[in-house]
Image 1 (cartoon, rainbow, N blue to C red):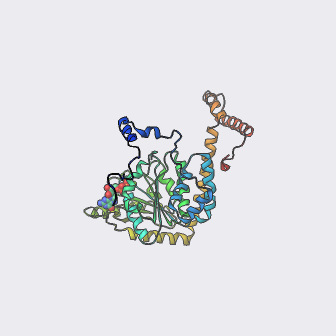
Image 2: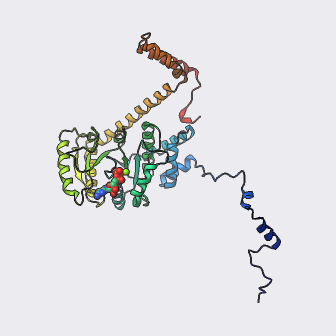
Image 3: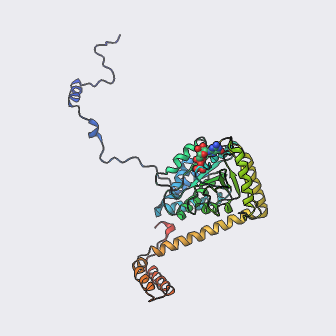
Length: 382
Ligand SMILES: Nc1nc2c(ncn2[C@@H]2O[C@H](COP(=O)(O)OP(=O)(O)O)[C@@H](O)[C@H]2O)c(=O)[nH]1
Ligand SMILES: [Mg+2]
C-alpha cells in the first residue's frame, strides 16, 4: 500500500523552498523566457516542382500558394510564378469560363452559391473568382461573399478566391487571368468570375470569359437600376433574379421589357441571340434552365468556331494590352523622361516645339538611356 504522506504527486517540485520563493516573487517568469531571436515560424518555401505537382494534384493549399505567388508584386515571385504557369499551361483551357456582373445587391453572390452548389452536385468542380478593382488590402468585399457563399466555400469541389487587392485594373486583370489558368490546371472545370461593375471591370471580365451574364432586378422599364449603357451589349444572357414570391409577376413583366430592348442591341456573341431569363437564387429556380442555356451556347459556338475564335482573340488582346501597359510604365517611369518632361511640356505649351517633335525627342532620349543601361530581364528574376 502506498504511503500517501510521503509520496509526492508527479507535478510536485522536489525542492519545496523553490516553490515558496517563486510564489513570493510573483514575477512573470514568461518575460525572461522570451527568446529575443524568436521569429514566427515561416511557411515552408515551396519549390517550383512542389507548386507544379501540387496544383496538378488539385491540392487546394498549394493552389492557394501558387495564386499568392501570381499576385505578388515582387519581381522574384513574378519570375517564379511565370515559370510555374508556363509548365502548367498545357493543362489549361479546358474549363468553361463564365462571367457574372450586375449592380450590388442584384444577387450575384447568392446566385453563384446556388448555381455552384448545383453544379458540384452534378459532378463539376467549381472555381469562383471575383474582380473588384476597389477591393482593399483587407479583402473586405469577400468577407461578405464568403458568408454569402457559406455552403459552397466548405465544399471540397469548390474553390473560392477573392479579388487580388489593389493595383491597376490591368494588374488585377493579369492576376485574375493567371489565377483562372492555375484553377484550370488544378482540374476545376467551371470558372465563375463575379465582378462588381466598377469602372471598366465588366469589359475586363468579358475579355476573359466564354459566357457573360448580367444579373438584374425587376423594374427595368422605369429605371435601368444604374446599369451602365453598353453593359447589356456585352451580355450573352440577362438573368432577372429574385423572380420569387410577390416579385414573380413583376419579374415576368421585366423579362418582356428586357426582351424588347434586346431587339435593338447587337448580340455580344456572333450567332447567339441574347435573351432574358427568370431565376431565383434563393428558391433555386431557373438555375438548371440557365445551365442548359449555357450548354447550348457552348455547343453552338463550338460548332460555328466562334468559341475558339473568341478565345484566340482574347489571348492576343491580352498580350497586346500587356505590351501597352509594360511600355507605358517603362517610358513614364524612366528617370530621364520624368526629369525632362516639365521642360518639354513647357516648350510645347509655348509653341516652341510641336507635340510631334516633343515625342520624337523624348523617345530618342529614352532609347539612348535604355541602350546605355544594363538590361534587366524581368522573366529571369535577376
Ligand atoms: N428574394 C430574393 N432575394 C435574393 C435573391 N438573391 C439574392 N437575394 C438577396 O439580395 C441581397 C443581395 O444579394 P448578394 O448575393 O449579396 O448580391 P450581389 O451584391 O449582387 O452579390 C441579399 O440579401 C440576398 O439574400 C433571390 O433570388 N430572391
Ligand atoms: Mg457579391
